[in-house]
Image 1 (cartoon, rainbow, N blue to C red):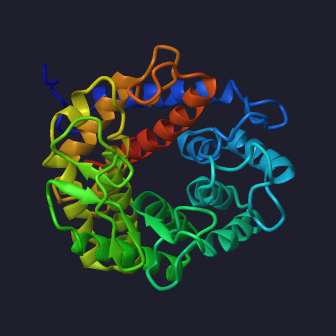
Image 2 (image 1 turned 120 degrees about the vertical axis):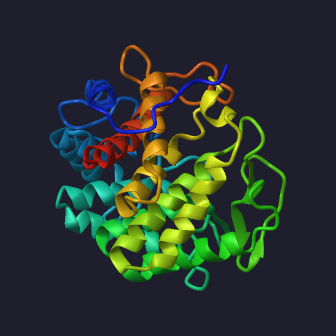
Image 3 (image 1 turned 60 degrees about the vertical axis):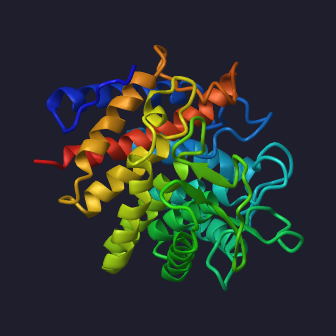
Length: 340
C-alpha cells in the first residue's frame, strides 16, 4: 500500500524530526571513545561522515574529538588516509570519504586540516571535465562518477574553492545534457567526454524500477542549490530542479519499498533547493522526506542500510548509515524550520 505523506512543515512534524535527529546523534556519540576514536576504527572506516553529521546534528564537541583523533591516527600530514583500515573501500578514490572530513574540519575551524585534505582531493579532479575520479589509480582508468563529483563539489562550496566548484558544475551540466533517455534513466558515469551507458546498478538509475541507486539526483541538486546561492547562477538552480524532477516523477517504490533506503539523498537535495529556491515548490517533498526518515529509524535511534543489499547489518553498517541520515535529516530540519 502506498503511504500517505505530509506536504508542509508543521510543529508536529518538526518535533518528530527533531526527536529523530537527537536520537540518532545520541546513538552515534555513545560509540565514540574518550579520545575521539569511533568504535570499529581498527576494522574499517565507517566513521568518515560522522564528524560532519555531529556538527550539523548538534554535537560539535563530539565531532571535534573525532577530528582530533583522525588527525593523530587516521590522516597523513598531507591530508590523505594512512594505510590500513582508515581509508575508503577497495581501490576507489578517497574523494567520497575525505570530502566530509574537509567539511567537518572547516566547520570546526581546523583550517589546516581542511586545507591539507582539500589539496589531496584536488588531485582527484579531472581539470578538463571537472569530474571526480572514481578509482585511486585513475591513470589506469579515468572513470568519473556523479556521486563522488557532487560530493567533491559540496566540500568545495564549504571551503570557498570556486575553481573546484565550477568544475563540478561544468561536469553536472554536461552529464545531464548528454543523457539519451530522460526522464526514465540517468547514466551517472563518464570517461572524459564519453557517457557510459552500461546497464548496471552502479552506472544507471531507472526511475521506473525498484531497488535502484535513487540517491544520484539528490546529491547533484544539493550541490547545485549551494552553487547557485554562492554564485548567483540561475542556470544552476534550474538544473537542480531538473535533477530533482527525475525523482519526483519516478516510481512510488522509491519511498515505499521497505527494503530500500536508496532515496535518502533526495531529502537533502530537496532541502537544499527549498533553501535556495523557497518558492519553487520544494516544501512538500522536503516534508515528505522528513517523515520518511522518522519512519525508517530503528527504536534504538540508528538507521540501517538497504536490506536488499545488507540483510544483516552489523554495528559498522549501522554507524555509517546513521551518520549519513543524521546529516541529511539535519538539513531537512533546518530548511523546514526557516519556513513561515
